[in-house]
Length: 281
Image (cartoon, rainbow, N blue to C red; front, side, top):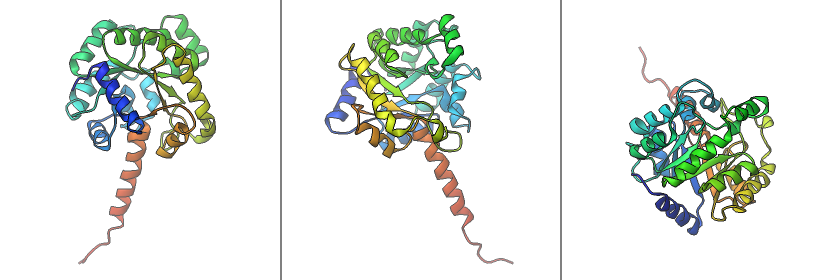
């Protein structure tokens, strides 16, 4: 079902008014989306990284040149996720820096497929150093993502965006983003996640999330603040952060599908291997 921007916002505000956090779930497969909905997800987000993640590869594969990011999201939406989701707004991760797309045409295709909103993924926000500088200098920087979100907002999409610092948060709020997701980095844990020693500490996350929210609110007071990634990997981690800042919820991808699947399959296989043999011979 395609929801309008106002309909999505009403649904999210109703959750907050009921004292419940907003929870967005990344879905790399139809079954992930189907049971995220059963579990109560408020948003289901399709990223190209989900295809790589659920194939057993690191999520950052979605940032590299392994496939057409926008085509992957369209295919996953049309053939896997949208057919099985009944009542939850589905959000498309759109690569706004894609130089081979006419963005207004792409967004009309996204709309026609039944997506209710747009997110900026893959994002150059995950890239720093000289490579990031060179992307910015050659018209493939974060500003292209801001432009895409601005266009999507004008077209009536609900927009929820990844931002990595207060400056990016302010720019997205100025473009009209409905929701900023304070991205704390690659999610820790599991077989292909970041090691905790390489991530921001959980204790430092609330202040970083709050700073991103405050930058958005100075421009657009009704911006919804959510958090994602890095040390915020499990429900207890999200509870810790949300209790210490003004974030209204959490968005997870590895947290919602990869980590649970890794544990569930491993545990189930071990239980089958523990089944005793019956009569022999």
